[in-house]
Length: 134
Image (cartoon, rainbow, N blue to C red; front, side, top):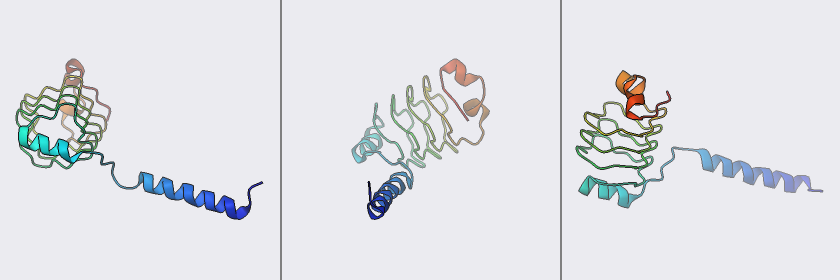
């Protein structure tokens, strides 16, 4: 049988681990991936989850298969960018310019996107293979 003191210690450690593991935003992006994107405008299948890309000009960037989950893409210029297969779940897309971007097989679940019907609820996504859940 476990003593009361031991049980309290176990509960405390478990609670502390749970709190530390769930606070703040998930930010797993790699500095090398962000640097590569900024210098070459190409970062295929890289991890930029949780990264702050606010306001960058990424016209023509190649982000095929990139993990952009939870990234701040507000005000980013992604004109003619390749985002096919990218994961943009929970990304902030407010004010993002996606004109001409390849969004085939891109996942945009629960993204913030100014209620743009062509990105967050229109029929165009289904035809393009974009998976949207708002």
